[in-house]
Length: 361
Ligand code: HEM
Image (cartoon, rainbow, N blue to C red; front, top):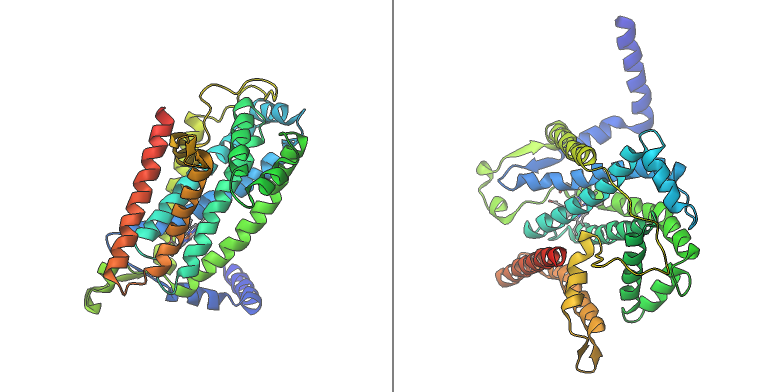
């Protein structure tokens, strides 16, 4: 017993000398989390991070058996699903995990937006977060093609055709991704490299910055809490109080993922036939559905401009305004603050309505 304690103390001493653990612990203990009726939203970033960890682990395991070649990609997924021990489980965790992660990142985005967590000095936390969402969607887009089934093939074709219409760089980017005029072996190779190497490096680097900003600035306080007299403001320590609650929330989030995997293991459609017809009523993944539906609603020509190009421009301007408006809303002007909130509500309602419409039509 005494020997164990001594060995433990020695180990702690060893780690302390090399990694200054007490400084890190001190930092975590100093960080405090405001307690108010919107505190629940402070868990969202952490849930996104735990789902990201699942994606990294399951992604590495899938790479062991997945073959990024046109002739074998579909067969390798069939093999993972039916012949490799727990292959179906790992693949379902990865596919469901991707969807849950994007859903949570979207919730995190809107909760930080409406709590006005983007205000000074957190502008770069906001901007790095937006880039993280773009990267998450790029993960979804590139991963979708890899099983090489008919839906993934044609959805990617539509996606690349739409991207090609984007003014200035759209055509070049679509050509670079496709690796030629048609979707081919070059496309699957490029999507694979982007999905398993380029995006993870970018995402982990960017996330490092995002979390560093969160650590530097601490948790933001919504106006209603900030304006309270100090005697009425309550906080809890990030470590250990909030951190242990974080762990409980992660366990819950992982349980949601496991339940989905068990109840609805991820399937696969018939192998892609590039010369066949696109499946009727083909739709992209839910997180692209609002944009897809919006483009479907735009008439073919608007004056002299092609409808699709007009739609893409309009969505680009709307997204840019959503990114920039928070930088203008710094809390000094009530009208700008109200405008930012109203704009967020409009974007959220439009995205939900268009997605539901797209899913039902
Ligand atoms: C891979 C995706 C992401 C991960 C893993 C992540 C992780 C985190 C974590 C752990 C926190 C601290 C806890 C919290 O407030 O929830 C945080 C805070 C924050 N995140 Fe993210 N985030 C991601 C994407 C985003 C996105 C898409 C946005 C918005 C554009 C965003 C904006 C913010 C802001 C403004 C804060 C500060 C919140 C505050 O101080 O109250 N993040 N993020």
